[in-house]
Length: 593
Image (cartoon, rainbow, N blue to C red):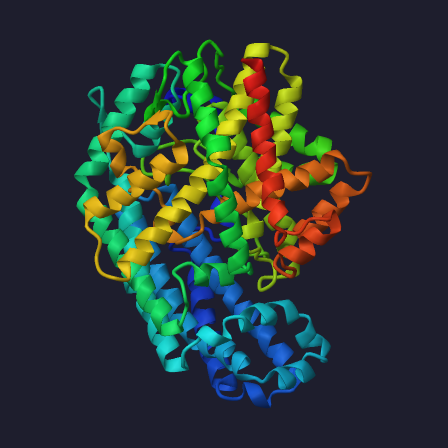
């Protein structure tokens, strides 16, 4: 979709005034000043005294802490969203950095609080939790205390906290601004990374090839910078893991996700074992549809030959998603409709805007915001359905309060992937043209492969890079070799990987911002496949149980949340059931010829 067509469609942009009127607003300055004073007062009042507080008094302290932390989170949410809207603007970058530094300085006064809570004995804490004001925060305290074996003394924790803004956060910013400012020469035109990536799903094979070659050339020109960023952040994590006594590079992520390492290992093993039945089999089938023995990597997500492809206007996409949500639950659709009725979505692609898509929860006292880069493809409708699922989840969990509403990443993808599935099933049921139905099924399979197979391959790539980095810095060539070996294993013999593909790990932001985040997508997709199978065979009441699961936020872990649906992610058969749904769709496509 061209910029002119985007403008004609009046794609929405968000209005961040529900957070703050502007970067220089008096309200923002007032909140910063108050948070600074309140955090200093909190430190003075409670430092070194937590063990002596009664249950009621500790409950009141947690409430005060929550209020300060929510203000700081609101400020940073605003700064992040302003920055995402135009990552390339140096003044916005300066504002973002200034806010990071200010919030980091203020939050340093609060570091002691969780540490002192974790110094309490189990018996002493159990006694304090009898007091209702503290019992209200029991789930938050439970999650704080899982980090007890890995926490350092208060002085060291404050040092690491203070250095974050000039360490990991600064490297993250360098990556973001490099990608945002990057311009890729394609047919004599300077295009953004997002625009050229979009061309990889163009109907014209020559356009796809030119896009792939242009991306590879530009990524290759920046390979030393991306390798330096990756090596530095991996070393930074290794130091942190060593000091905190984490056994494996992914251990801290698993702990934060409240998921056992054996469960993640079982997921990864199950997906890797399924490569031949899923990705290898599908891409062989797709190559046959294209009349080839092998597909070039730039044809992996190509539209099917003669399948057609129509641009979907924004208003149509909105109706499709909300109707699908409404057929499942009118209440869920009502929550989702707010995002369109109010300026909570930024949809148009433009130079400088962050690529991809996300839902930012901000804070419960405000509301989430969605960022998408809408270009009119069916995939963009699915992305909208995905991010709206996140947004609805965040709204429904909001009443839990700031400290209890956050959902672990493994479950944070549930509502988003479920929203995608609802929308896909609705679109498929309405489509009567056999060629387009086949194309839709193929598109869904490809999305699932991108969510499950590709993300587990990403996870294995990260695991190998971080493990080898513990022995010394990796050369750019070595990182590229790891990438190519793992991609070849996951994609299979029907995909031809050209030499420039070795650079395609460089643009993926999750490796930089959230190490080992990626397996959460596979976790969520397999979980939703199993959950959707329960829904299709469920009696009345499924939607209510589902919404209750979303409302729980971070108060319950995966075993407790899935129990009402008769599901258990610790059961090895759980992953086979979820992967079987993908395999079944490939069976359907094979039957269609």
